[in-house]
Structure formats: C-alpha cells, structure tokens
Image (cartoon, rainbow, N blue to C red; front, top):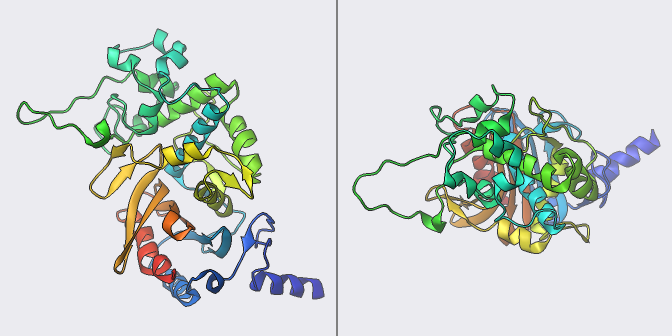
Length: 364
C-alpha cells in the first residue's frame, strides 16, 4: 500500500523520467515550469468531458523536450492509436533513413527503375511514367490520375483496396489531365501540382523493400522504432503481404509524440542521432501548395494556426478522424491529438479548435 501511494505521488508531481505507462525515456515537468497555463488545459479537459468535442482519444503536449501534459479520454497510455494517414509522415522518415544508409540513391530515383517487375505488366504506358521519381510520391505530385479527394478518380484509394496487387494498380493508372480556359497555363507554386494519393505512398513501401532488402515494417522497427524505444506497433498489410505505408499504422500516443520530438530535435532522440538534420529540414520545407492556407513537404503538412492575435507555423502529421501530430518550432512544442471521429464533417476543424482555443493560448 505504501509503495502504491508513493508511485501515485511521484506521478502526480511529474517526476522526471516516469510516465503513466511506465516509460522512462521521457523527462517530465509540470506545465507551469515550462510556461504553460495549466488552468487553460484543465478547461479543455472539462470541455471534452462535457461533450463539446467528440470522440477525442488523447491529448499530449511536450515542451522543451519534456512531457508536460498527458491525458486519455478513450483508452489509456498503452492503447495503439489508428491515426490513419499520419502514417505517411513516418514513411517519409523511412525514405530519409534509406537515403542516409545509401540504400536509396536519392529522391530523384525513378520508381519504374526501382520496381522493374511493375514495368513488365504496365498498362497505359507513357514517358511521364518513366520519369516518376521518389520525390513525386513524397510530395503528392506524380502525374498519375490518382486523387483520394475525388470519388470519381480512377486512382481513389477505395478502388485500390479491391485489387490484389496495389502497386500494379497505381502504376497502371492513366496520366491525369487538367482542363482550362484559354491557352495560357499557370505554373503551380514550387512547380508541382498537388493531388492527394495514398496509393503513391504505398508504392514507397515497395521501394523501401526493394532498396533495403528488408520488408518495410522490419526495416522501420530496426532503424527507427527500436532507436526510439518503440516496442509495440500494428501495421496494415496489402493482400500480397506488403506493409501499407500510406496509412493505418497503430502506435501509442506517447510514441507518436516521440516522432514529433525527434523532428523538433532535428533528428535526435535523447542525444542520439537517428535521422540526418538535412533530411528533417528538407522534409518540412514546402515543395507543393495545397491551398492558400496549406503547403506540403515530404509527406508532412505545413500550415499556421492562429490563436488570438498570434499565428504559429507548424509542420504536422495528419489523418482521418482529425488525428494530428504537430511540431511548433517557434514554441519548441510538440502536440499529439488523437481521435476516432472518422469520416465526419468538421473532424479536422474540431481538433484544430483544441489547438487554437486551448493549447496554444495556454503557452506563454
């Protein structure tokens, strides 16, 4: 009984190195010690419990490399969260690691050259397909007719899931076109036309396997997750047993926060270099424009969140349901917001409100 009481006291006062899940690789601190208004976060909890926000799973905040806020509203610290397309940003990290190890020559490497088995069965051949590079897939800007935001698109991911060979399905797509008024054609910002394509990111799983000689999930565990102390994951696999790098990877909220902190640290975790800082910088710079409010890096979203009179730029992982894993470099702050509010109107706006109405205003 005395030992249980002591553990409760240590957790309650945020002993460095101890978390509710028993993990010892996070330093802990109180919100006030890093300039965060705990009362504002308490008000957020009340709003969630009152039902003002639907199906929120967890909210975690780290500042200056210390875990300062950790609350679970569905499940607990051990729950593996299905953050859907947030997986894509982890795929970006794996591509960076393969380049770092010189397994992959670089982002200019051509997909069909790396995956010759798909060229042999290729439909709708076109010189533009031969030019598709790793960077085209990292930036959602390949010329393939693939758009998950358009139900009519031949490459919409829901059509891919009906086919056994997902990689062949994507590469067999025709080249997309754009109807316009007038002869002049405006060039897109950064020179790339953005088109959200989960199937293209799945192809990167085959690229990783082909270049590293290891199945992507095993490569990820060895090169990324084990160095981060991540021991529990669940992947989704295609009918051919290929890990789905476009979505569905389950990780705990604490481990998702590690990914954010790794990127905030420029590629280090607990003082150990995991990913080159150049790759972190390159991945979180804009390479394609989505809208006036959003840009895209290498499978990382780039946007600013306004709280009061201030606007805070962030790079983030994002997935269906309103799931977000965010890095705010100017605040040296990482945030995880998980939610099971899948396929509902306003799902992303809801978790954005947690940021703009509570979390960001709480940071001094």
